[in-house]
Length: 198
Ligand code: ADP
Ligand code: 5GP
Image 1 (cartoon, rainbow, N blue to C red):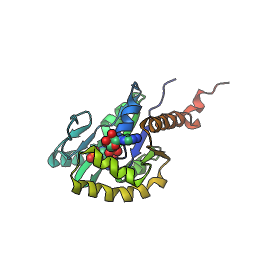
Image 2: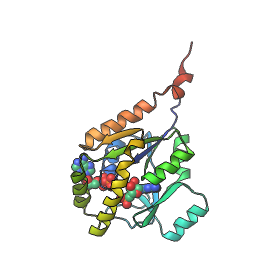
Image 3: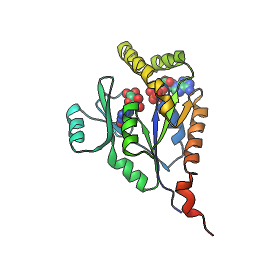
Image 4: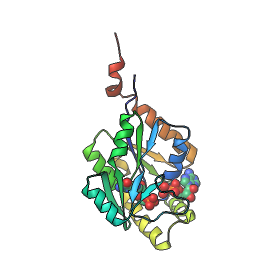
């Protein structure tokens, strides 16, 4: 019986550890597809085009909007971010789960279009720890860090609207909870009832 691919959204404030926990989740998992977003943000040191993001300019981003190429897109702290629709749909057709690391406005757009999408919020163990991680990452200017923290306050308020809440205390515990959520979501009767015989 073929597994049906599902879409999972991972949201959470900047610096909470989404990329880090997803890296742990993806270890040895070729049944998962990481949705590579397009963004107008400049690459950070170590980020690779086509793997972490498709780094494009505002004109190319506008072109993709006009072509209706995005499942969703949003503005975040002065840049645009969007999920290319085609790759998500291709991955699901292959039976893979598509994992979207996207912020809350984009998450709302996806759920409006595709209500079956599973939403997972990743929260920090404390506000102080969030500030510490965001600062220690060393990728953003003090001004950008303040803007991201301002957004974080709003984002944390939306945690209760999600289907699951994972607190990223240790990376391995958080990744384990994500594995459990993915597994449980494939045990829903709607996906399995056809397998019952007799
Ligand atoms: P996000 O993708 O949510 O913006 P990152 O994955 O870039 O966050 O993590 C931000 C910083 O916090 C990084 O320096 C990362 O190494 C660190 N980090 C992530 N998870 C943890 C954790 N559980 N404990 C301590 N530090 C963490
Ligand atoms: P960062 O600049 O730290 O990589 O990402 C900033 C924020 O943008 C994060 O909250 C991340 O989840 C979000 N993000 C990344 N890709 C997308 C996307 O395609 N769409 C939306 N709406 N948000 C995204």
